[in-house]
Length: 122
Image (cartoon, rainbow, N blue to C red; front, side, top):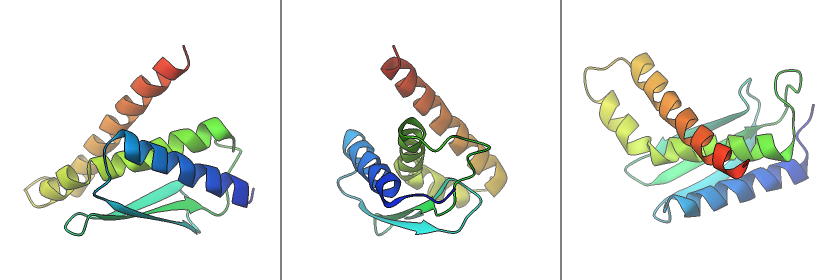
């Protein structure tokens, strides 16, 4: 299913809200859309405090529904990558495998998201 301009705009708005929530005003965040199998993707330049967050052009709604709650969760998840970007960069400079570090990062983001959205859903 093609992601609409309205969906994309909502996703970017949510990212901006979470960017503010986590005090990331020192980061310059750019948004775009790409062809990817993932829902979204984030690339961070830690030294320059620049992040590029991309939303997929085609959403596989057989896996996850394309709706505002899911777009909001996806935005939270991608901003989580920005929050943890420095930790991730430091870890990559050590003797940890990229896979182990990536899995650790994903686990922290999922925990943060679950905690936040559980409270919102009360």
